[in-house]
Image (tube, rainbow, N blue to C red; front, side):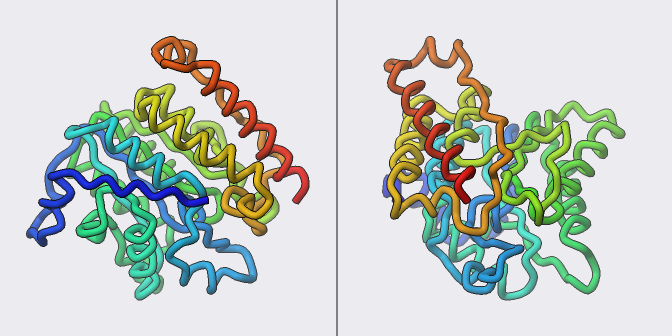
Length: 286
């Protein structure tokens, strides 16, 4: 069940006005996300990929809530960007999806925060993303880069290339890669050095443990996934038909220090335990 946050603040009103170089400010903390099969239910390796790619309301449940919560937690020092290797008109579908689903930084200027433009005749998806990530790193020189992708195509390779580049150049930037466990037989194994997640709920726990989302944001994500994963008609919003996740076991533990600062730790842990039970059942029964 999609819950849209319709809060609009003064900043979002200001940035709806087109401005040259709007996304040129440097940020200390970057969240850079893939779109297809990471936050959008596209099914790159499924028979229905064309129909899914055309969709603008097929969000993996809770991801827009999570990203908005992260943007709020990071504040003025943070920035959310989207990196897609979809060619041609397909990348416009991604922009329409982000706008309709309510992803940050807002409907009016979301296109300014999407990095795209791959020529499939010149570069593979992985080559394009690695090149763009290195360009972003060199331009921003941030303290932190949070990368979110999936194991369907070449996100793991591209994110690994950035990690290697930063290490080879003695960079101080922390690069942390989260990979959506969407496929098993059709996808790539997720190697060490990358953190797997299966829903926005367990990714939100990871973010909370790092201080990248506040209690209210975590509670909203957990609530949405607990409801959707337990309600038959909405289960596909969490685990769609094309998803393969029976082997997923990498559920993170909510950090005790985070829980100690919350108003209702038992409710948070109870909701998370129910999410784990519901989603594990959905994955096993596919």
